[in-house]
Amino acid sequence: MAADTQILIASDKDVVTARQQGRAVALQTGFSMGEATLIATAISELARNIVSYANQGSVTLKPVRGSNGASGLTIVASDSGPGITDINLALRDGYSSSGGLGLGLPGVRRLMDEFDIVSRVGGGTTVTVTKWLA
Amino acid sequence: MLIATIQAALSDADLLELRTALVQQVVRNRSSGVIVDVTAMDVMDSFASRTLLEISHMIRLRGAATVIVGIQPEVAFAMVQLGLTLEDIPTALDLEEGLAYLQQKARSIN
Amino acid sequence: MQRDKNLLKEPAIQKSRATELTRNEPKMELLRELVAHLRQNRTLLREEWVARIAEAQLLTAMTQEEIFAEATSVYDSYVAALETGTFEALQAYARNLSERIIPRGVETHEVVGIVLLLRDVLARSLFAKYQTDFEKLNRILDAYEPAANRIANTVAVGFVQERERVIRQQQEAIRELSTPVLQVRERLLILPIIGVIDPQRARQLTEQLLRGIRTNRAKVVVIDITGVAAMDVTVANHLVQTVEASRLLGATVIVTGLSPEIAQTLVTIGVDLGKMNTVGDLQGGIEQAERLLGYKVVTP
Image (cartoon, rainbow over all chains, first blue to last red; front, side, top):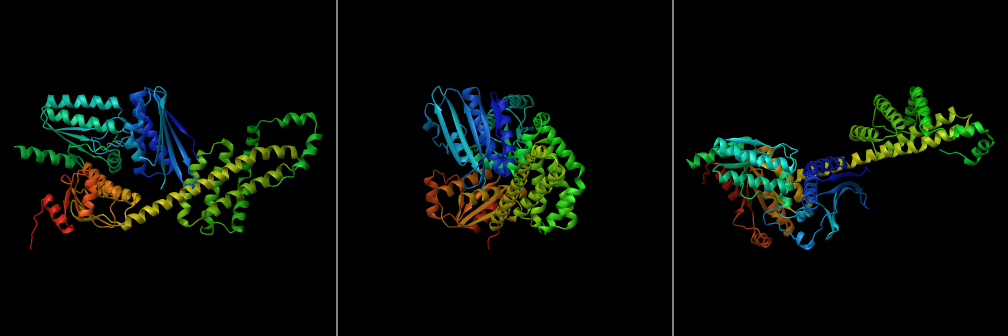
């Protein structure tokens, strides 16, 4: 299993770095161009949330192997910012409304296979998403 | 007619700069149409999509038309998964189609 | 590799102080000595290895010349990995090698087999060289074994990953063949969807269509869903996404074969059917498409 890659996020330039690295690692893991684009897009959204709401944090790319032997990529976007007050609201699927408002979390969830979020007011936020090779 | 080509590794700040610059150019040159070529963009996320919407609206307010060209198949797929549809901004396959669209539009106006 | 550790302990204890100092010889030194030995005896050891490969009847799908050429590269990469202690280059080489030999029908057990044979051939040569100095042999093997095992692992994993990639590619190709995107006229594509659509197939259809729009420079796409077995909310969503994604590429989509039930499902998920271009049947859809493209439609 390849090593983890951690990217510190503190400015919008880091968002670009994070998604470029994300795409590279996704391709290395064996994902197709299309899937790598999905992953890079999800990373871009998550990294941007960190810059917008928490000033700084990190995005970690972790190649993983599932219990059935499948390969995948887990992305952990973490910050110690103000946290999300109403997680349910943030996750509400506003699919038919003009896309891109708020945190974009429902969209990220759609792009990936697994999605998990832990957030405490005043205690930071960690979003963990995973995509598996077909 | 203005053609703006967006590079791949544009940061948020770069995109905002582009927005300002484009609108200024439209006013200065009294352009009738703007083609925004995003062929090199390998990722289109909510910020990029929102900015393109803003660019388009601002240009329209100044009496010119916009068309976005060159969205890659993989990028388009990721965008709709994320729920980004670019609403009512006209889109075309590439530069050639974009030009044809703007020309047709200009003709139908006259 | 079997060593009777008890047998080796006794001579070591009896050795003098001087030897105890050399026991602390850093691992890098030992590896350097080892690598030098492997390079010096390259020709000999490689020949022995190739002979063992033939004896074990491995790589039968390849010719002698091919085996020799690959054996040379593998040997050199093996020694380089031992020398540098890094395995990225080896991993890349393993993938490369796999890309070449998988189409030839080489299987996993063969690749694992030949790497283990090389490990053994090299270990035996170390036994031979240091047989008069068990102490040193012990230490050399302590340095060699973990590295050799890691190498075997790296190559095997590289091969398996490449195989999995090839299999995935083949599966994708098979799926693609089963649903062709048809170019009927210039700038007009038809995508007849037949049968059961699971999320994976839906994703694959959409990607295929979008690529097709780009390649064929299509301005209109007719998606015919007459043959779709069942349309649930998930599939309906995929359809809507396909329409929207096609629009982003500058193509207009006409959906044909919409039954009242499917129309109901679409309304349920919030689709404004007034905005979606729908026509009753495929023929009607094609005529509508041709009108959009500016062709004159001649009705009999």
